[in-house]
Length: 388
Image (cartoon, rainbow, N blue to C red):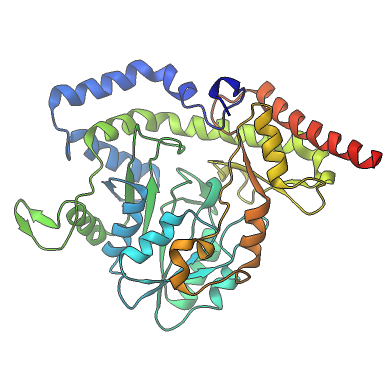
C-alpha cells in the first residue's frame, strides 16, 4: 500500500522522539564532542542503568539482540553437545543464537492462550544432555518466573531469558532479565526501548559471565592485543548507548501507556468475541508491557486472518503477524528434523494471530477506529452470508 494511504501506522516512533528531540540531540552531540565512539562513557553508564532497571547486577552491550543470545549462551558455557529447550513460536533469532554456539535446539510447543512456551511440553523433552531452557518473554509478557524456577530446579537446568520484547516487564515479583542466570535484550528501533539502529545487551547477576561477555564482544581480549578467547566484534556503540540512556527514564511511562492502550483494546473488542476475535491472554496484570497487541482470529470467525488483514490494509490500518511461520517449519532449518504437525498449537496460532497498531501515543480515537473497522468488516461479511 502507498504510504500516503496509511491512516493508522503499525508503529509511529515520531510520537516518542519528538517531545525529547532536544535531549536526544544533546546526548548525541556530547558523544561527538567527546569522541569516544567505541566502548565510551555513555555505554558504561547505560549498561549500569539498564541492568539496575532490570533488577540485576551487570549489563554488557552488544551489536544486536541476536548477538546477545549467541554470546550470552557462550558466556554461560553452553556449546557443542548441549541441548537447549526453546519454543518454536519465537522470532528466528532465538534459534539462530542456539545454533551459533553449536548446541542442539530442542523445540517445543506453546500455550494457545498466551503464545508463551508450554513448560509441560518442555518437561517431556528433557534428557541428560539438556543444559538450559530459553523462555521467550513474548509480546511483552513474561513466562511465569515461579514456574520457570521450579522447572529449572526440578531438572537442574540453566535459565537464559530471551527478553527482547519485554523491557521492564514484571511477573511474580520478578523483572524480565532477573529470573535466570542471564538474559538477552534487543534495542531494535521498534522495541519498547529502541535505539536508532541495531543494538542488544546481556544482563546477568554473575560477575564471571559478565566478564566473559566483555571479552567475547571485543575480540576475546582481557587487555589490548591479548586475546584469551576466540571472541568477535559485537559492541553496542557509544552513540546508540547515549540515545538509549536518554530514553531509559521515559520507559516506565511508555510501558504504562502501552498497558492502557491494551486495556482499551480489550474493552472495545469484547463485542467481537462472539465473532471469533480473541485477544491473547494477559496473565501478568500490570506487569505486561505490550510490545505487541495480538489477537486471534479463531475458527468461529466468518473470515480468515488474511482476509481481515487485507481489508484493514485497504482501510489504511497497518497490522503485523508475529509470527507467520514457526521456527520448525522455516526452510533454512529442515535439517533439524521437524515437520508439519509436530507442534499443533504453534502451527494453529501462526494462521490466526494478528498484531494491531501498538505504540505510546496511539490515541483513544485511533483505537476505536481500528476496532470499528474490524467490526464493520465482520458485519459486512455476516450480512453477505445472510443474503446467500
